[in-house]
Image (tube, rainbow, N blue to C red):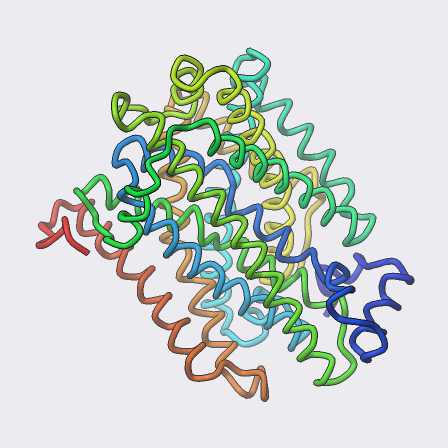
Length: 436
């Protein structure tokens, strides 16, 4: 089988240095950056515009109360991204390819259909977010912002054919921009750190709408396409020659995942904190990205509003490019063929144009797209847990008891949130909703 990443590689000098580290001929700590990249690319999915929408609604509507959901979602994401990376390193296959090889045709095609729906919901959030940021920054109509975002995204995707490193550096740069923007926001916003700390220690769901936002936060944080993508980014990046080298690769990968998703989680926490500090006391009805931007100028000053827009624009453009990469890998893994990147980009962005043309509120579309993602999420995570605990697939690298228990618990948590939301949707009373 021709793998998705087979045509993408590192330079010979970088590959040689990686092999020297794996062979114990170079210091591991000094060479850690050689192994950085896959988790950085995957982490952009955790700070995409869907996160902006759900985090603004969480902070504005409920203050610091839903911070615990962000932390929980990030921990679940960290675990599943580490497992996805491990699958790619150990087997040389990505998650979609494993599903194609080991599941029956009806199961495989059903999973592919669910994953494609998730990819479209992902791109709806990412593409709309970039377009909103660009239209607000340059005072353009939303449709013009969408066209400009499409062009910018396609430009980034052209670097994918040049190997791993250019895309890793580009996406890493966007992650850094988003991170620095929210670091700046923390110095501008009047944060009640004591109240934020108490919210982390005393989880609650104040009402039914808070539950919808909580499920949206999970859907925006634990992204289905990122779980597929991470295994594809690690499967051939630095192929190990033996199990000793695989263990070293896994150690580097795990630490990179922890660091990259800790940064992404900190950005998400900062989003909620900023929204809570700026809007909750007197503007709790702020629910749209555009309203948040226009409200920030009189509340916190023009600098805060500009920083917010820059971070949103960086998030939308970079995450949309990564989402397209993931969509290509999912299609090739499940059904064995690819389509031209421009066609993939066109198909996945069409729903966003339809939403805008129908007059649907853009921020509402972002939030509900994250709920769709949360319903699609069990597909890859159940498959991932099944594969990574299977000794026939992973050999001695199969999940240990603690990891297996944590993965199953994370899966059950996502399924429970989805079940509660479904009951709520059909107006089935849920006793004790205000408590966790």
